[in-house]
Amino acid sequence: MQYFAGIEGGSTNSKLVVLSKAGKILCKKRGGPTNPYLSFPKTVRTISSLVSDAKRELGLDLEKPFGGLGLTLAGIDDEKIYTDMLSHFRALPEIAKQYDLTSDTIGPVETAFGPGHVSVVIISGTGSACRLVTEKGEQYKCGGWGHILADEGSAYHTSVDAIKMVIRREEKNYLENSFTRVFDIEPLRNKMKEYFGIQKCEEIVPIFYHHFEKKRIAGFTKSIADLAFKENDELAKSILHRTGKKLSSLVRGAIEQYKMDHPMPKKLNIIGVGSVWNSWDIVGKSFLEEFQNVNLKFCVLNETAAIGAATSVARKSGVHIPLDRSKLIKVIYEN
Image (tube, rainbow, N blue to C red):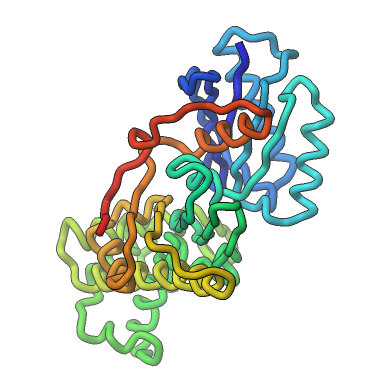
């Protein structure tokens, strides 16, 4: 039997699936982060470990390669990293016979819609990025520049926005966020102190400058969402509303680039990826406000994008793996 594996990886964790030629999921594994831009050695070790663990579970010879390994990873856009990673794994014949390396924005599109459609993926997890993919595989990118330069609409950026609001309210500095004056800041301030385990605002400084963990800071967005949905806090709701607007701006940017070369498609297929979309009732509705005159379908994945990575490398190997994609997605909005 021929097996095809796919790995979805990012700055937080990774997921592996192994598919049969018939499209059956034979094995699932989870592992640590696989963002080669942040740590190339750690990424290749994690990938190799996931592959070995999967083979053991399936009772396969560790020296026998998979038919193909598809990787949909954050940080793979860098040309040198792409080339180095491909060279690294091609030198390990026991891993796979064929490889397909793409960014973390491509796997979700392949999983949700497959090839031959104009599709958009908008990622909002720890980081954010948007990619529009045409029927022929052309790509238009907006965002994905990392937390220092951009990542607007991500969990990290949302958390930092909220923290800045607390700090500036403490200092009576309303230049950037004058609208916060109309909201009670105390619930957000208390959530911030509780989440980060601090007593006063000044104690947030070493968390950013001496013990920086992007994942930890991004995780504060969950507290903001709890404040919005469980406690009906207006400031928290306004923060998430702003996040939705920033995500819509990324999609708009990709569409505008596409329209320079093509007519606007009759319908847009959009796939939302990442934990921020769990706050759909605020983030999603804010996002959709910017697309009232656009015919679109918005979905989220029910399964990992590693499935798309596996089917993509199989196709590259001349094997068509059938998928019932209606079971892989949940349609949240369609007009």
